Image 1 (cartoon, rainbow over the protein chains, first blue to last red):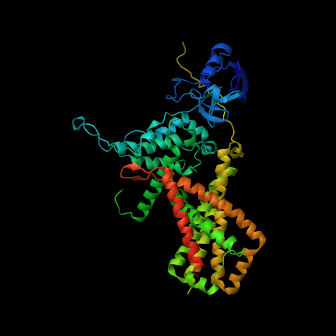
Image 2 (cartoon, each protein chain N blue to C red):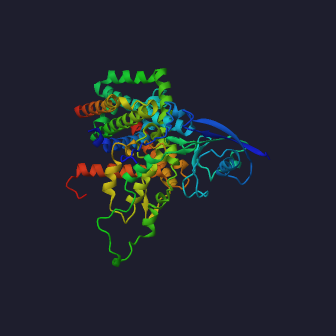
Image 3 (cartoon, each protein chain N blue to C red):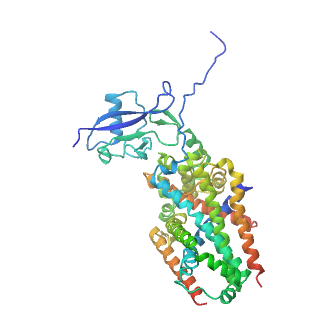
Length: 247
Length: 116
Length: 138
């Protein structure tokens, strides 16, 4: 078994360079190490100037998403042994502006997320005295997988439409909109449809499907978007062909 | 105006894609390969004309010509955007793509309605 | 002490990597996607061929015979074989992707994707057989 493995890491120091560069580091090859462990080794022992985001180190916070050998990956869930003998290329998440080294700016996503109103919208809130909202297991099942999103943004890094049209609302935001649409407690479908049907909404999606492939939590944003398109198109047809019908 | 029509265009794309997926392989095989190669006998001109006269046959032909044309127009438009990054030529692309589909649809309708 | 506080906003130079027009060649899933989308060319082409066939049929026996002769030219046969490949690729990818757009539920349980794909194939074969039967029965 090799003693060390090479990591080729994307660096970008805006105060000293105009474009990102690559820098190689030798890290110990431990069978139980994931790429995040290797990055932390680099920062602790080799080069303290390396910047990157991480938190839970167990695949639930969504902070450590990066491009590993060209594939959007959670670095806490990718083991060095899967990439041996290397070298392993670690770069910042694709299609996002790079702030420094492996850190990207996700402000645009946060704005897109707010636009789709990812919360329960109700005409009238039920008073506490009337008790809880009841939901059957089937009703929960219809949206549960969409609710598993950890906002890691791997799907945005995988979506070519995001690369070509940075204003596109994107997989996670639309999937989360659909998560609330499908929730039996929600009454905000019409509002969300208006937000997601716009210029940069779901109609820009061309069903590449890579978002679902890279999602670490099985959210299936591609499926959510296609179903949403069908709902949107049906709603439009109904409003045109049966304008007297109730909304 | 195009923005409001987007759901309809997607609907036509879906319908056209389904029609093309289910029916084009067999039609292309028969008309484009089997009959020219002599593997299948082409029906006589008069019997084919009789078949097409039937209102259901006319509707069928209209559907399998028009819907796939809209499917192809919609897909080609987005392929140009994604593949060649020519979003700035939107007006030209939209006119050319859907215009062709519309012309084909009108032509098919005219032909199939004008048959005695 | 100045009575006017002056703030400047230092905006770091965020780097946006330009996306090449050849982005779809960089990874196989992207290439497969563009090939799938390009199947719209044979679909559109054949729709126009059907339009031509309809026109020829209605124009008269001479015109229709000319259509049949054109179809027999080696160039057209080669093109049709190539386009048949494209149209089959469209059909196969369509049957696999269509279930994703519909969350079909029967008696509260979600129907597995595989079953929908299978029924798509069954429907496809059935409908193709019917078309051939109608054609042959003339």
